[in-house]
Image (cartoon, rainbow, N blue to C red; front, side):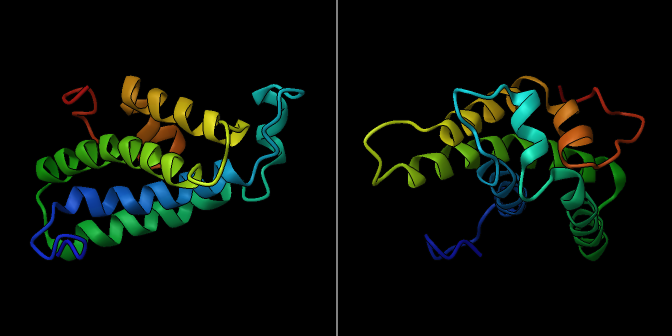
Amino acid sequence: IDWELAGMGDPAWDIAGVFNAYLSCWILSMPVTGALTPEQFIPLARYPLNSMQPTIRAFWDSYTRSVGLVPLDTERLLWRAVRFAAARLLQTTYESLQTEAQLNGNAIAMIQLSQSILQRPTEAIVQLLGIPLGQRRDAYN
């Protein structure tokens, strides 16, 4: 159910919301400043992504088991959800900047992460979310 529009919603958008929650929490926990490179500020994240990945994977596995999807439909849903997660990151960035006068380092990092997810969804699924792909991993790139 899409509670904002009070109707049936796309499950990929809801899944994307969960992925976005973890990814934005990770980005927002970093001290992103112009003085540090990503190689320097990523290890300083208060909430490291590698500690969140088991939970992300558990969510995904539990969700797909509970709805009883066949493997091909599961992968299709994952590809859509990952692309939607990139859009949700942009939405979260926009919402977080409502009271700001200019873009901050974390907002720029979230925009860049969104672009990277859209450009390389396979890497996003495997490396960011920690979800292994089946044999058809390039079918939806």
